[in-house]
Amino acid sequence: MHEDSPAAARTTAAPRTPVRTAEPLSESLPDAPPPGPPAGHSATTIERGSFCLARCSCGWSGPARRSRDRARTDAAEHLAAP
Image 1 (tube, rainbow, N blue to C red):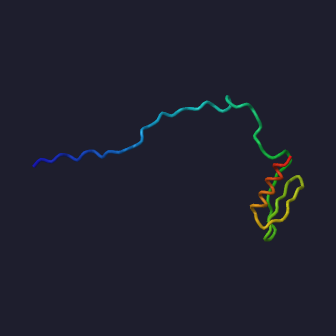
Image 2: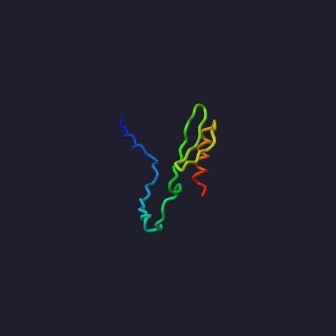
Image 3: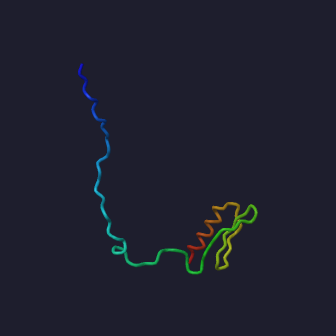
């Protein structure tokens, strides 16, 4: 009896695509400062018991909230205000 060797396993790998190198961003974008909070402002949240409030380095303080997320929103709104 003569037996044939089993066929090699076939894989269905995706075809390889060539890697494209992108041009550096510094050549395509003008120099601009990154967006961020106004100078002198640095907001954070502070917990006092079951309440959380937002405070800023400029002296601003938000209302005490039970929701930490709402206190963070208060801080973000303060930083976004002109």
